[in-house]
Amino acid sequence: MNKFLAFVTTLCMAASCSKKIVSPTAVTELQNPSNALSLYNNFCVRCHGDGGYSGKAPNLAKFAGDKNDAVQIIQSGEGRMPAFKDRLTRIEIDALADYVLSLK
Image 1: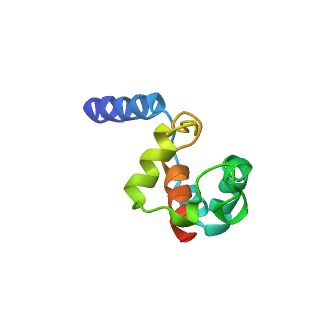
Image 2: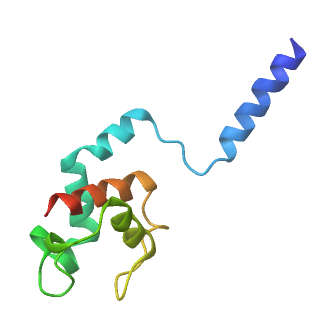
């Protein structure tokens, strides 16, 4: 019994040290296209505009990369675009990448 209790305590401590715990419901909600649009409107529309092109930044409807390319650019930035790896979760970045690819 003591070994089991020590094991459970160790698991709880490890879980409390992690950055973020995302529930399956939160993952599903972020993958919802309307939530991806909300992320786009909050973080991207100022430069890229509605539909991916405003004239200030590259036309996202003509983005030639794949999802991995989009994720990398969103995470690390490119040119004058800032990096979002410290402002968005990986799930949010994936949702934005999917949204960008949907503009093609």
